Length: 96
Image (cartoon, helix red, strand yellow):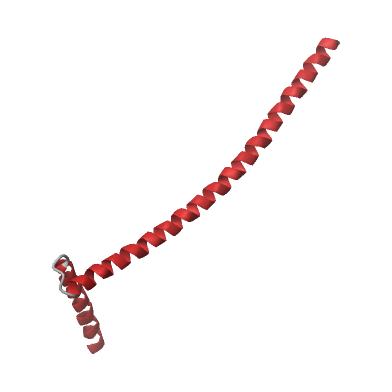
């Protein structure tokens, strides 16, 4: 009978160890999920900041071209032409 008791004790110990490992893994998973959420939020903030800087850079390029810089004249002319077409379109719609 002691053999059966030893087997049962051994199984209880193994089950206890597995349950403990499972709990540790759950805690680790929760911690990693929180870290992931934090990093995803940081990435979103950085993407928004990057978009803002890109817009500022484009505006600065256009402003420099208008002030006489030869670097981005072609882009500035295209932008102005696009704006003129948009204004013409709006005027056409208003006159109808």
